[in-house]
Image (tube, rainbow, N blue to C red; front, side, top):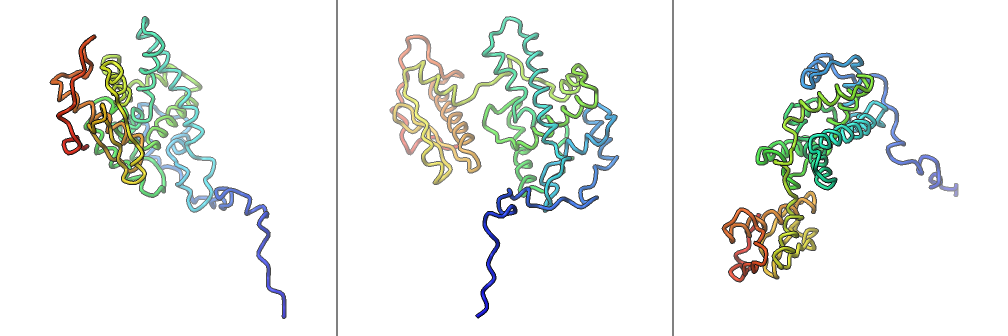
Amino acid sequence: MDPQPQPPAADSDSDAMPREQQREEAPPGYVPPISPEDVAAVEALLGYEFKDKSLVSEALTHGSFYLPYRSGDSTYERLEYLGDAVLTCLVSRDVFLTYRDLPPGPLTRLRAANVDKEKLARVAVDHGIHRFLRHKAPKLDEQIADFVKELCQYEYHSNGLLDAPKVLSDIVESLIGAIYLDSKHNQELVWQVFRNLADPLISLETLGRHPVSELLEFGQKTGRTVDIFKDGWVKDTKVDVFVDGVLVASATYAQKKEIASNRAAKAALDKLKEMSGQSDVQSAPGEAPEPLDELDRSGALQL
């Protein structure tokens, strides 16, 4: 009997390579450059005219746009890296000079609030930049649409209640990086472009607080025991908040446990404020915590 053909050895070079590297290079012309009309539209949104128009195409091209071929060099990742560093430097300088007596802790919070994923995603949506994103990622358009729909509920920032698609903040950072390169590293010009796009910047007066941090601080100041139970999230995407052993609030969010935790904490804070009849859940110094006996599992707040 003739011997059966053997499969290729498992340690061959092709098997050892990551899937991305195993893909073929895209044929010439497979990924077209962005149209001149779209370049002009993006420049109008940014208030900046590029000398090197190819930077616009690169800054708006997600790696998935090359599928089923291997992503080429012209994706936004390197420009995003540069833009992230430039924005961090420029916003750090701005808050430092604006708030000359503010200690490092609040300065860091102010900077983070103005360059984090949600704030930059808001910039992309508010100016319609997201409409020029080039990608083939499944369900990404749906995720962006959901974010746009929920965005109007929060004037400045949701403080962890919204799940902003990272790609939106990525393209803002990549465009900032592109402007920085195209302008020969002109930081003042880059700052002017970003300042106009991000207006209004989050200030000390509009800076919100993270609901989980606020809830835990409330527990410390009032002598109450706050527990956030996340064990059920894997099973039913739900997070529960207990105060002094009583279920106060629950929230569900399937995509990320962190978002569910934040929403549960916010719901608990709202319930505690409602119970106390105050806009602030913090008790006055020396004041005894309000009892939670009237709350039980059947009356717990659901988000």
